[in-house]
Image (cartoon, rainbow, N blue to C red; front, side):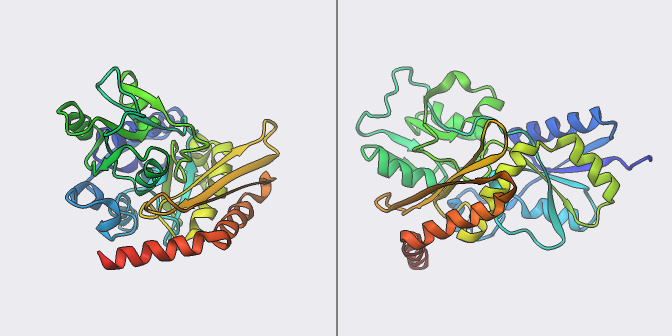
Length: 314
C-alpha cells in the first residue's frame, strides 16, 4: 500500500530535531517517506518563568498535539519525560524508542569541578533535581536554567553557573560528553518518568495498518513495557514535570519480571518517600499503580498537599 508522506511534528530545538531525524531514519529504513515539521511550543517561548509556573499541562507537547488534531501532521515526536501523565482521548502513544542511559549528570567547564565543594551554583529547570540537590548536596545552591541545551551551555561557559544538572541522554546526543564531571547514581537521583526515551504520539484515528507499520519500525518492546509501569505511577500521582516525583522501571534479564522504584520528594528535600516493588512484566501498569498507592499512603499525600499549598501562595 502506498502511504502518504508522514509529517513529523517536533520542537525546533537542536536536540528535538536530532530525535526526530533519528525517528525519520528508522521510518525510511522501513520504506516510509517522512517530512519534519518544526514548531515552537509554550515551553520554548516562555523562558522568564520556571516550568512549574507556566501553568499549562504539556508545555512542550500541546502545540504538537494540536497539529495532530488538525490533520496537519501524522506523528508528534517527544522526549518521553515531557509527555503529560494523561493524554486526551483522541490521541495515543504509539511507540517508545529504545532507552538511552537514564542518569542525570552534572556538566561543567571546570576540570577540577567538585560537587562536594561549598558554595556551588548549579543550574537546573527541574523541580525534582532542585529538591534532590537540596537533600543530597545541601552545600550547593540552585538557579533557574531555562532555554534549549545550547543556550544553557553558553550561559554555563559565560560563568552564570558553576555546573548544570541535565539528563545524560541529551548531553550525549548533543556531543557534550567531555563536559560531564559527575554521573549521578540512578538509585539516589532516580530519574523522572520516561527519561532517556523518545515517545511517538499519533491520533487514534490514524489508519490502523499504517500504525502497525510505524510501531514495528520504531517501538522497543522492553522500553515500552517499562514506561507503561512508570506512566501508570505518574497518572496515579496526578503529577507532571511540576511535581518532584520520580520512577524508574527495569526488566529482569529474561524479561519476565519488572522492578519499579518510585517516589516523591518535598520541595525542600526534607521529606522523601520511595518504594520498590517487583511484578510479572505483563502486570506493568498494575505495578505502577501499586507503587504509587504505597507512596501516597506513606507520606506522599501530605507532600503533595504541601506543594499545592506552596504553589497557591506564589
